[in-house]
Length: 365
Image (tube, rainbow, N blue to C red):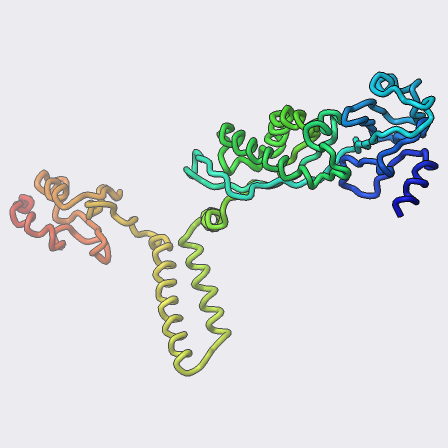
């Protein structure tokens, strides 16, 4: 088999590469014994670049086009190798093809949560993920620094390192930004653009160019999200008293549609009565006072009085006693409190009777 490959290599003088994969960065053209015939045709397609390596040294660099490998179009090669035998025999060299197109939709994400200090929540842990796009910028740097002698270098051979680089810079930038956790979603585009510019120099040190980095999601730990959901639910509910009334009514309706009988029926009935009682109290407490009645007396104020047909007050008992002593409130003055069914003459109110006993009645005319 090796003899056949050698003989076949002597006749094949076309060097080209058509990529049948979607993730190959660098491909080395395989020839038997790395022997390339003098005058061989090299085809470099659009989105490709080729490098000729002779005895471990980069000899020539080829942009897209068709090339005949001879001394006239390989001046660097001429200085490296004085081909013997009239420049007619095969020479030892390797051709590396570089895929110069964009490699898109590559994933990045945090393996472990990033610990940050948030202005609203305090210390929190965040996870993040997204995608990025890159391409080869400097083939010579890439082959020297990363690829080496690999004959088939794919994105999977370097994406782990690139992902670690992105995550490290992301954590640093997010911590310095000071953006509150609840406002991060509104800044995904700005974060992506800022991180892209920050990591460009480090990608370039590998011979690569990061074209775009996108932040798709930044999330809180599940337990924090659950607590935040409860907080959001409370904000949606609004008036808790009215919501409780609604829940009690819904529970009563559900109990009425699902009688269970026996002990279960008794338990359900007891729960129904309890909920009905609580519902009644809540409804009564929420109803306004009856028309024509004074509003509830706040604090220590106890009595209202009727002066010249107008309601006045409220007054505490000491204040009312002082008005009785000064004659502003007489025995016939009508007063009202929560303890009285209707407006009543002051002298008939038990709490005020001792005061009137100390005040002489009006002088008869």
